[in-house]
Length: 198
Image 1 (tube, rainbow, N blue to C red):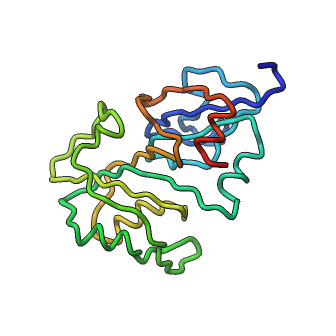
Image 2: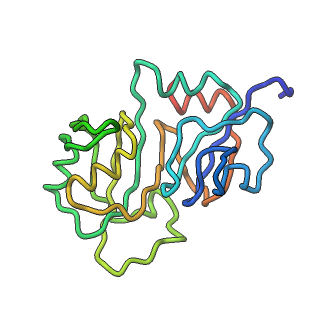
């Protein structure tokens, strides 16, 4: 691979880190990870500061458009820990769509999605830095093809559950696998595009 080739990375973005390399605020940045990224590397999409999990990075400027601005929707799966016990009725509400407030102040009914209760979250990700909770909590998996601002958090709030922890575990067939918070893995271009179905 020569220096003009694009490069592709998956990372486990930790909590309390923004999905960018530069900020005017005093925050933890992607450049603080113990990895030397090539010049021109940028995040594809984002995870908010309090969310964690799979984040894609590349030097290829076309990927964001291919993944998030194409006519073909791409699935993104989130493992969500919420306060209190989730019922099957609540899961059904999430699946069929709930009303959330979107940017600009309007109400929006979320598109039908996949949702399920997760008995053992360690099947999907190693929960080795679990946040200690003093109340009953549940884990659920939500798979979306849309991405309104803070949508997953707003969806669980709409069914009266507080989001404690939110981990993106996959985008299409690109999975977090056994990456630990802060770890980086380089992916070859062919596999990157195949796994993302773009």
